[in-house]
Structure formats: structure tokens, C-alpha cells
Length: 458
Image (cartoon, rainbow, N blue to C red):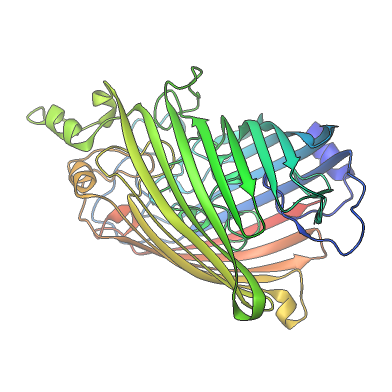
């Protein structure tokens, strides 16, 4: 109730939430630094799929019968300037609901267990922890310090987790505390915000970016971003979960952790239109099981393999990818992502994708006189390694998938959406996703998923 009351009291429109402030050239004197801010959002997503063909189903399958699921979230974004260049942010949030999954899988802890059945999962608003009742958490709590190397020349507009100020093109930005790795890394203006643009996990992020996170997508860590006029170097160090894909974050520094490096080069193609290409590499170091070890341990037992049974030592798992976007003409942009990770070990935090390739186009409604509207179309192909294929074929379970058997084929997904703005602060989005070979299983699907999203951000 407190969140809802505060949210209703807010009055200032804002752009998409991020911990990495955007900036633009300022033709006049630097603006006065904003001292504090309060913004909020509410997002409701309803998704539905009809009956689809399935030769068999497992405990982490998408239900082959017609099904619908709903999620709701509301968030406050509070910001305060502490001293020169220092900003503090806290984001309390209330969540409710489940993602699509299997309504009554064997041994389920609740009547409905969602967020299962597709590796490139279909809703970025659905967490791995669902609840029929509303619950509250502080999702972000972090400090950002910026050191300018020269006279501030760029205006940073006020927004969500972004106090209005001015910065130098040459600067160092440090972020420390609890936040999402993807607040800083793998960002993309056309596909990165499931409350405003695409919703599929492997479209809004690199499918093979197994970044550190709890079951809601947040963790503790620090990042450093070194900006120049044409490029940015980002490095980060973040805590993994104590156990893969669980709620608790490892409390001991440098025991189970993930370092990340990303280099961004900004472009000005097609007559000086903005774009960028980013190259990212990361490592996960923690207790994770190998697929081969899990298969060997289960051999002859009559039981399915389990990576949980072979998490006896810490290992390094490496991965990386390329993320690019480019404006082609006013209000029209394209984007793409390629990513891969070591498929020897289980996915630790994100989802069961070892290889992923994505491309799409985004059209701003300003092209046809509706500046608050947007259209998006994208496709993605996800794959897993040979050891992972053998593991799932033997009945193993992953983070999101596990049908009890596997007739392997690459997972292919197309997503299209139309967002209709309702004034400057609200939008209603119709979303459609077509998933062929859900969970890499040619014996299941294809399945069409229809979504309706309501979003208010003020």
C-alpha cells in the first residue's frame, strides 16, 4: 500500500531505468545539478498460449495445454546527491505473480510453478521466484561516483536512477552496491527493457551472458567505466549465488564471483547517425557441476543425472559476446547480439543457453506522428553444447528447462510488439512470440505466445 500511494503521488515523466547515465551535448551553460529525485513505475503483463503438440512433458516443461499467467510489479526509484559527483540510489519494489510454466509439475512446492519450458524465456518481467501474493524487496541499493577529467560539456537529463547534471566526455564512473549487472553491461537502446520494448530474455540480453545474479536478477558488486569521446571501457566484479540459480548471494568476497570486461566503440554511420559496437568477456568462478560428471555419476543408477550432485569443486566458466546497434534513419534502428559460453559446465545464474544469435529492428512512432509509440521485430536462435544435449536427453534439469528426454533441435524464436503510448507516461503493448523447438525439443511445439503489457512510468 505504501508503494502504491507513493507511486500515485509522483508527477515527473522519466526515461528507462539504468545505472549508466546517458548524456547529450549541451549548447548552453551546464545546468544546476539535481539534488534529489523520486520516480516510479508499475508494469502488468498477461501472457497466454494455446494448446500445442508435445510427445511428452517433464517437471520443467511448458504446459502443452492452454495456459495463461500474469505478473505485476511496482517500483520506486529514489535518488540523492551526497557530495560532488556522488549519487545514492535505492529501489524498493513490490512483485506478484508467475511466468508461464507447468501448472502442476510433480513435486512442485506450490500449485503453480512458473518460468519454465523455454531457454529463451518469454517474459523479462517474470522472475524465477513467483508468488500468488504481493511481496516486497529492495532490488537496488548503490552508490555512484563520477570523476570528470575536464570541463563538463555534456548534459545528463534527469530520469530514473539518474540525477540531472553535467559531465565531461572524459570521465570515470564507479558504481558500488546492489544492482543488476545488466544495468551497466550489455545495454542496448532498442532491446534491453522488458517493461518498454522486447520481452524475450535472449533478445533483451545476450542469451549466453551467464551474469551473476540472484533469482530476481540482482547482485552485489562494483563496476568502473572509463569514458572518452568515442569509446568506453567497462570492468566489473560481482558476487555469484551461493548455489547456482538460488536466492542467496555468496557473502564472502572472491570466493564465488564473476569478473567482466566490456569495450564499447561508438559509431556515426549513415550521415552521422548514432550507433555502437560492444565486445564483452566474462568469467564465472564457483561451485558448478559439469554435464559429463553428472552423467557419469548417474550411470547405472536408473536415476536422471543431476549437476547438483557433482558440485564438489570450484571451476572457471568463460563466455563472451558482441552487442551492436545503429540508427539507420530518423526513428529507425537495428540491433544484434552474438554470444557463447563454455558448454562443459551447467548454467550458473541466467538461463540454459550456450550459443545465441539475435537480430532485430525498432521503429519509433515519431516516424508517423505518434512519438510515444514503438514497433519492434526480432528473431533469435539459441543452442546448447553436445555435453548439455546428452545431459538433458538423459532427463537432467537445468535452470529453466528439462522435459525428461530430448529430441534436440536449436530453439528458434520470433518476437514482434506494438507499443501504443497513452500520453507521455503510460503505454499498452501487444506482444507476440513464436517459439519453435521450446527447450531445444523438436518433440514439443511449436507454440505461439500472446502478451498484453500495461506500463506506467512517472
